[in-house]
Length: 119
Image 1 (cartoon, helix red, strand yellow):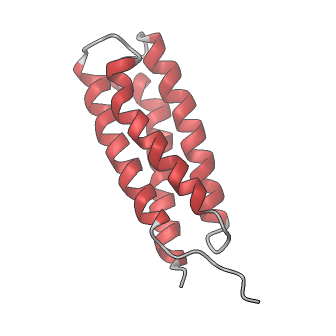
Image 2 (cartoon, rainbow, N blue to C red):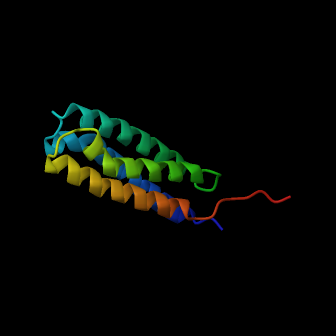
């Protein structure tokens, strides 16, 4: 059975996280680190779009969108260590915390059942 409320809640939180990840370099003051800025903006857009599609079609066969967001959340966690080359605390803590939120919420969204066709 599909729990649409669970999907909408988890994916809604990921939409909020995506918006934060886009604007966080400017708010937290690490927009001068170009690599992490571009990384966060692109990830924010992709995570937000995937989560928005999942919210708008919770009963459809869209579990793969949540699985994709889990992978993107994991990348968000490791990206400040691999992309930026900077050891500034702001991008590291920001991306690790938001990456954990995205990963957990995407896993929670993906864990709900998926509608199957009956013959």
